[in-house]
Image (cartoon, rainbow, N blue to C red; front, side):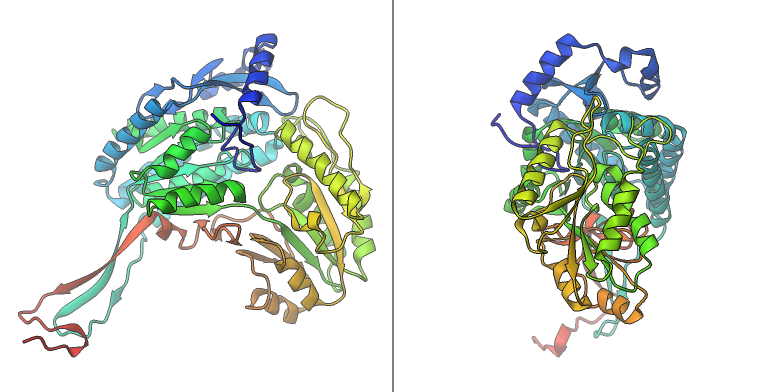
Length: 538
């Protein structure tokens, strides 16, 4: 396996050298799962060693990896990943399961999803704790992510009785013209380390309601979450006498991701991760004329107009910039501030940053946890050096926090031009760049000058500016907010972005259409055979 780089959220690829160092650490350390403090992990069906492949039976004959806790870099437990042979078994089983699942009516599928939601509710606290332990986000966010999965299941349950087609007027007498929606078949879902539960939930819940089976490859560095979630879904499927391979799992790295992208049996590949890796995945899928759904990078901006409520801006900005230690695809990475309020906003955020409670993500009251990996720490310091070399001034932060784990200070940098190379570059760490503008039209252009187009927000009381912001010459992003942060999207709307964010849409609205195929059907119920457009062929 060639040496490749883990890029941002994707975690699709991981180096052999990293695994080698992890193996050394394993030999020297006991597992957290064996510590009585973490005995609750066993209530999720986890053990010191776990199989990372599921297709109705648990399997795994590939490389054994260890999951580490980013708050202390201690090993949690081991997972055996999929080999190519395991992958083949999973695909065959999932395709076979679809033959049964496609015959289940949509409302009945909705009922099974409802039961999955109830099962997740029962394990919500435990799953939230596991996510905090393995990914590193604070416990309220970990539990909140599980709740997001539950919420999208509730949405999918309603959707199972509401799929809407159209009946069109036919120009031909005695004819009916309509459209019919059918499931694609098998949906492959590749998720990332930073949202290891919710993104799978967005995809799988809607895909299953539509009548698809799902093949999941979770991030290599959050395998325990993938195993625990799959075990919960397994129990519900078995209780309903549904083939459990409807929800199959193949934990693995680049080799498994590549197999999924190139496999013609997978009708749709949904990929969440970095723009560079997403581009590679999409090209492999496109080469076989498959369908893909991409949710990639975001260099998101908050614009603060001179009339904005600055107290609201500061309160929103703390979570938008420093929440999840800057590891959300919707994290605010640019503060585009009117020159009249720039200094006041920066000063307010600096004061608020100093009050953030740093600690173990599992501890009550912690608001700021670690980066997920050492690579994130390295990217953080590399970005700081680039920013300083380009003229940036560190207003606060800029240091490693002196405690075990991957902790760095949330950082605000001012003094850079809006088009400085480092400002235009998305870095998946808690650094935000504060830049100035003098009029709102300039601010809109600054928002749109980056290559990604995920999320954006405008703080203002000017309704003229609000509607221009939402209009054709306003934000070019998929998410366009007013007086709220760039992050924290609700499930009811479609989630995704434009440009190098990939163009895909997940979750609510009509995102369900991406998981189905549409047929236009013409039915002749007359005894005549007229042609369209009045053509005579006699």
